[in-house]
Image (cartoon, rainbow, N blue to C red):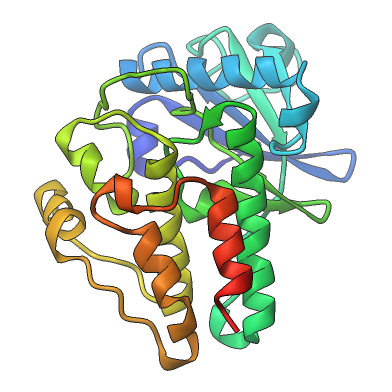
Length: 264
């Protein structure tokens, strides 16, 4: 097994391993007992979501096929990993190809519309099952066996939950209201998706030095500047990225309708 954990996650007790079994590539995700309590809670939350998905045909079209295994099962088959210090269960997922790696500049407008629609489809499917992802970012979209899927459900939240926001989202993709401690909603997923689309179309990542700068950027200073080729997407992004959530699209279906009907 090859350790692939990001340095900051490694310090907080997260372990992510990449391995091959019977000519197939997989990921093993686990959390150490002595790791940060927020990371422990997130991992347990994700395991619970995947456990629920095993009995849901609706969720099966959104997520990767998964297996939740005990550390005793892994310990009998692997060495050189910190099994004894890990939490009781671990998550195994097949390898999937990152979705937002194709350069938008190489695609005609019609192909871009289709590309964005496929991403919208999977988010719409998640929302229709009664969940919001609550931590959307480009790396959480993957393609597996010809279908777009979502990964990383540590912050996933039922739409019936009304939980005040902890600072557990990624500032680069946080909607303005989250910086004021409001609850996550469909509109916060839509805002994050708008930033993902904007960065993909513009070919540039937003930048800020610290959390305060991110708050100023999203709450006051964000300006949408697209290459001339993509100006037809400007009004769509502006409505996805409206500072006030009431001014954003009501749902993913409305975004899809605008994407199809307004962009020639």
